[in-house]
Image (cartoon, rainbow, N blue to C red):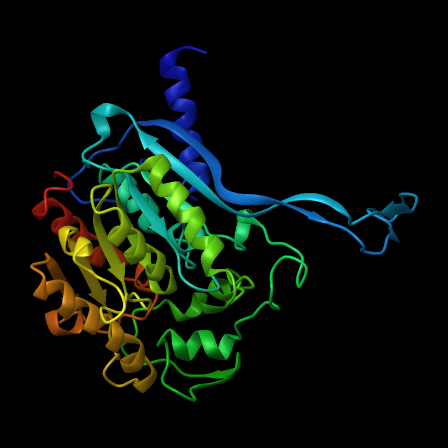
Length: 355
């Protein structure tokens, strides 16, 4: 296969991967298609564990196969993280650094891919804007896989109900979800409510005892890929700000999309973090939601501490800018491209990308 045929095949693979087969990669207004050089994936982090003393049992792997004696004892690779990347050809790359996209709690890298309503998500947007993009499934999530508990993971998994997703993500107010047949959203919500059930299919189990291996896996990713820019959502921000504080020369900016995990400046010196440009993007209805006010308060404390140390901190408060109705899942909202354009403009102003 010659070079041009290979590039065309890769571009076709990307389009199929992102749910847009047959369309040019050009959702960014005023910009033409981009050329994809490589699509691939890898795992980072993890460790080898040996289990012993567990009982054997017979299982059938297909209805017609003979029984197999399954021995769960032996060596396993656990606590690894999965990352998929899209690298652009040099003539299409307009960002100075690759963008790493990290998801939030109970979710996977699908957060950034095709939206629940079938429209292109932020992975596609920022590829089209000239970024190499790396989308991860953190430890225990999606293609990272999970491990036995309590032998390896130390707690049982936590699962999110539809009610929790509807109300925690501010698609509707508190006590607005009784069942799929009886739920009401905020009248001005930007979330595509007809696709809510499709969105909830993305949910995966999460463990509340795996922060340390998750941080190690993200640390390995940063050291493999960066210098880079990190775009992070919700609970994933705990790892992004920790590593930006650890590696201010490797992490060139952090875009926090409704981040929920902050560093405590009373316990951690955030002076290194002050060397990293930070952008915070906030949706609507936070002031009307006590739980979200409680989530946001530690972040505001961290922001104040970083600013006091001379940090470059910017915030996009969408309702304050007249952009109403955004949920916690801003990258999935109907106006997600409008918000992505604000992020891209900030990256340009901070010298991390060009138009």
